[in-house]
Every structure is written in structure tokens, then in C-alpha cells.
Length: 537
Ligand code: NA7
Image 1 (cartoon, rainbow, N blue to C red):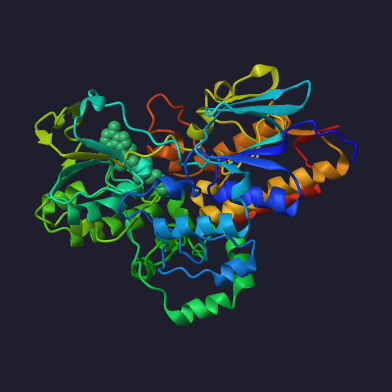
Image 2 (cartoon, rainbow, N blue to C red):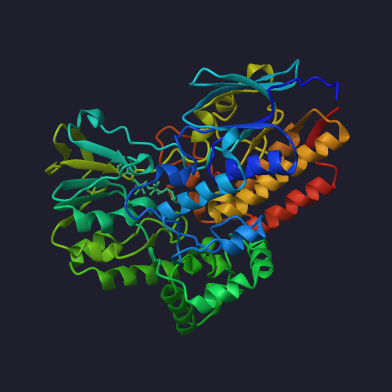
């Protein structure tokens, strides 16, 4: 009509991973809005674009590490293994970009550096490192929760003259470690995937471990064709169950306390989950292992025994055995031949809690007692999680206030999706949402669909802005903390707590209420006329 467009786009979306691609599809293809996606990488895929290290793989089963929004897509797509590998997931997301004709609204190789809310006009002005300045009604940060890779600030860090890599910023062409002497720092989910494969290639590998982990066997492999077939026939059932579950998998807690069962029964439960492989031992176990130390001790001790069985050298086995944190309170890695890697002659384990890394040198690194030389050094040291990717952008809300300044003492959100004083800004998988404790695509779809619903409802009623009230944000943030502090989670030094980044506030960031209940909560809020939000006009 005659109505003049007040902004360049209805929405600007940051990131072209699982979240950003689906957000664009919803806004543009389903709702007829205009949107521009800015993506830093020179391809789509987000996490699966950047994380190309050996062994990079989803720890969620492939049949649900997928979008569900298009039944045809889900029916047609064939995953080759139980857990999808990085290349296959990237191929899937490339396919999604083509299938829904998304590429023409995605600007690659472009990093969003700032976004300022113009209070008078009620629009976001977004700027990029490519020199773009565009305006939009909505600013949607689909930046990922684990996308701001970090390297610890070890003295001499930049003095190393060999090749160095971060697992989360892996060279696109891959790395050949054949014949090389390699060091790797970090034994989180990523390091544990990479170590057995680097060990097979490298001449020698030294693993620098700060905290021993409890890793569960993945038991990857092809999926039984009969199981595959049954799943294809149960699209509705699977997604109904997954969406209403705690963690976005077909996994449910045992409805008894761990201590109510006899030691024999517990053994059977643990063993069955161990044999099955995957997250069942974590988020499909007795629920009270997360809250009751005594209950947790039963599984923590059981896991320690499994490690001892697999590592030949007792001293190495002891170093690999976690004793300083409760099972499940750090993200539990899945592994394939991880413990066996330490039985190889060319792999050495250094416990850097015992002998801290003092310095990185031009040729390797030095601990208190020894000096190591490498051709290549790998940082599997993780991410400035959840807040990091947001805080790296200068996001200014009402009164020019910077989001990272508002969050100096820790993130404050309503539902993990919005923050007071930042109208029309949405986070996908933000702090205060359950996303990182769940199978990500399930949370992502819920977030994207809820944000789309908000945007659609606003248009219908002619509202130009939405933002949470201070009170709703305070209550939600309090609720997130209350749930966390009723568990053992905050006692462990994890990225959930910001503990992996020196100086970061120690605030538990994910929402522990579970994906299913969270979804219900969002739906209820929408039904109650967006309780906790202010819509204007
Ligand atoms: P994580 O899980 O944060 O693991 C990082 C690892 O690096 C972990 O073992 C850390 O030890 C170690 N680290 C970090 N800084 C240092 C220093 N300064 N010295 C020695 N060791 C260090 O990151 P990932 O990439 O493995 O996984 C991230 C998520 O991606 C994962 O949870 C999945 O959701 C996918 P620490 O345990 O802190 O003592």
C-alpha cells in the first residue's frame, strides 16, 4: 500500500546456524516479512561451520538432532550414523539453506559489531564490520551459546612459533597431524572427541588435563534399519515426546530416588544405560543425582570404576578419574575410545592441576617440572559461553545502555529470550533459557517459533515494541537461580557458571526447569496476554 517502509528490514538476524536459518525461514517464508541475516563465516552452519576438528560430532542422536518443522524434510533426510558428524550436519544445514531458498537474504563473511535501539523511531540500527548500517524493527541474536571461542591467557601464549589451533576455529581445509608432535590443552566434550583421533595420526600427543571428566561411551555406528523404519513411521509420536521431555531427547528420569533402589537394582539401571551409550546415563537417570550428594555418589563412584577398568596404567587411570566434582554437574562428554587412547605408547597425560602450565614457549610449553616441545598445539579450551557471543557485540538499548554493562554482574533476562530496556531484541538460546542443557535443535525450534508468534501477534494488534518489565525479568532471573541452587550444579567450576573465564561473574546461566515445562510456561504467558511484557502501543 501507500505505507512507507520505516526500516530497511523488518528484522535483522545475527548468525546462520540452526537458529538463524530457521528464524529466516519463519519470518520470510511463513510470515512474509523482510529479513537480513548477517553471518561471520563464509558459509552457513554456525557451530557446524566452525568446529571442524577431528571427531567433531553431535552428542545427540541424529534422528532428533534435526529440524522437525517440516515433516517432509525429516522424512527424506537420511543420517548415516547414530550421531551425526560435523560434515554431515553442515551438509544438512547447507541443504536447508537451499531447500528454503534462504541464501539470498544471508550476507556471509560479515560480523555484526553494533546494534543500537533508536528510542524515538523505535528501530534498531545495526552495523557490521563490512561497513553496512541497516535499520530493522526487530534485532534477533541467533549467535549461538557456544560460539565465542577462548584461549586461556597463559603467559607467552602468542609466542608459540609452531602451528596452533582452537577446536572451535578449525581451518576449513583440515589439519594433517601425521608425523607431528602435538600438544592439546583441554579435556572437555571437544577435547575428548578429538584426542583419540589425533592420537592415531600424530607421532606423539601430550594431553594437558586440568579437570578429569566423567565421559560416557557414545556407541556410535549405523542405526538398525528396522529402528530407522519404525522411527520414520512415528514422526508425530517422537516429536511430541521429545518436545515435552526435560532435555529434548527420548529420555526420561527414573521415577524413584537412587537410594530407594538396592545396590543391585542401581547397578542394573546404570549398566543398561552404559551399554546403550549416550546421554541416558545423564538425563535419563535417577533425577535426584542432581540434587542429593549421596545419590550422586552412587553414580559418580560407578563411573570412576568404569574408567579404572579401561586404562592400563594405574597412575594414568587415577589422573583420569574425576574426584573433585559430582557426575553430571559439568556437561557430560560422550566418548569413543577416549580412555583407550591413553593406553597407546605415543600418548602422554599431564595433570596441570598438579603441575600447572607456567608458560607457552616458542617451541612448546613449560610446566613447573618439565618442558615440552611440539610441532602443533591444540586449544580445546572452550568458549565464553552464552553471554560471550552477545557481549562481543555493542548492543545498546534504551538510554544508550550497553547490554554487557547491564550484565556486568551476570545475565538478566525474561525467559532467556528478552531483556528489560532492550525492546524488540530477542535471544535464541540465550542465558536463562534451558537450551544448553537440552538437545539444541529442540530448544531452538521452540525459541524461534515463540519469537515468531510474538512478532505475528504484535503485527496483528499493531504493537510496535515489546519488552519485558523489570519485575518479570527479576522474577525470572531469581527463578533461574533458585532452581540452580537447589541442585549440585553451582558447586562445580563449569562454563554453565562462567567459571572457565577469569573475571566472569559466577552465575549459573541455563534454566534448569527442563525444555517441556519451559515450553508450557511460554505458551501460558502468550495466552495470558503476554504476561510480564509491555507492548506498545
Ligand atoms: P569445555 O567443556 O569448556 O572444555 C574446555 C577444557 O579446557 C576443559 O577441560 C578445561 O578445564 C580446559 N581448560 C580451559 N582453560 C584451561 C587452562 N587455562 N589450562 C588448562 N586447561 C584449561 O569446552 P569444549 O569445547 O570441550 O566443549 C564446549 C561445549 O561444546 C560442550 O559442553 C558441548 O556442549 C559442546 P576445566 O574443566 O575448566 O578445568
